[in-house]
Length: 141
Image 1 (cartoon, rainbow, N blue to C red):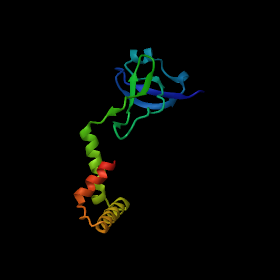
Image 2: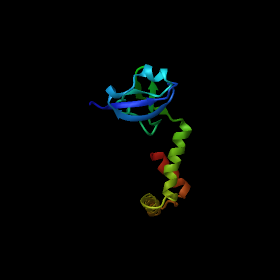
Image 3: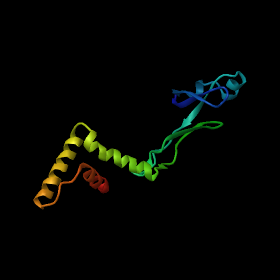
Image 4: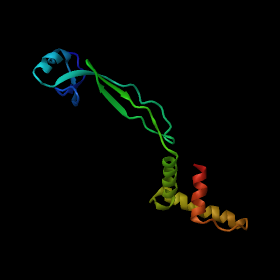
């Protein structure tokens, strides 16, 4: 008894109802299931590894499944590019964690803010405001 991954397909052939390891020899043939208006099982051809992408500029590729005549094919969508405003918003979120986050990021951010102002004071320069410091950190991301 050799088990392989199969998908249970609705009688109309449009929806995957379940996924299980099945013995192909024990399954009702697709034509017989369709004749009885019953769901049927198709083998799943599995996708390869997720394609590489840059999470800074793209959203992760999402898994896809296509119901073909004799199998279900799994694959990956292409990575979707982020818009400049989405990238900027993510950078703003990172910078805002300096002020908003509880824990290590907040502690490190505030420590760095204090040290930067101490160095500026030693060089007879005015203190940075939090807004200036956030803009500086954002420019480094």
